[in-house]
Length: 333
Image (cartoon, rainbow, N blue to C red):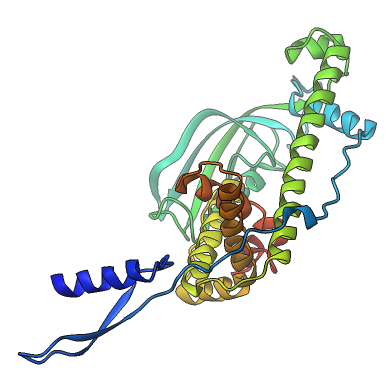
């Protein structure tokens, strides 16, 4: 085995091969008293010529200010900081109201961990509780005692509750409505600014910062895309396969952040997603290899972690541009 490993090493180094995957050694013949015969097969990194950056034509994104966006952002800030006020007249709870309630949930008559609370505050339709729970208290009056069923999703994080139906009993103590505050100096001070003018200036600056970052990211993507299109070359299938798997992983993590759970995909679903997104995975791999050549030519020192970071940035675009979107495919599946 030592001789075999040494022979493989010499073959790789002697031919100046840059491996893209783990090499495979196949023993052809091994008879006592005769030389061992073996073949070495491996995927190699492609030979890439330094791209001619001077021929790339990129249209720079234009950053434009939009007064309507400033107004919409201020309105959103006001909506997110609405104070709750007691109602002059009692009415049924509706979306946006804040309820103070006691509740206990049971499955098959047995209470379960995490299914009980006292003086809990819940915004109807706010998304802090399961949709079935928030729907169960919607339309109730205060004070009152109510009972309603709640179905836990099949992929609920607590396995002992996943796919089961619980019965909740709740006592409603108080109902408050949210008011939209006036955009005046008092409100500005409530959110940490001196006055409306300074709040507006801060919002304007932040919006411009987001736009500048977005424009920079877009310019970077356009440059990389132009670089890839101008320099076609073949890449090892195994590397493309690994990148497609990374895209699926990133999409799953984004879905977990967006929706609170991570999709459980079968091998067939994963294989289908990999195949559908293979063209983009190949483009990203080629982009990473071209970036390495550019940094070499510019004598910029980068490590593997830098290249990995660049690939991660490329993966961030998959939600908007995958054909079809990985996240959309995961939701359907």
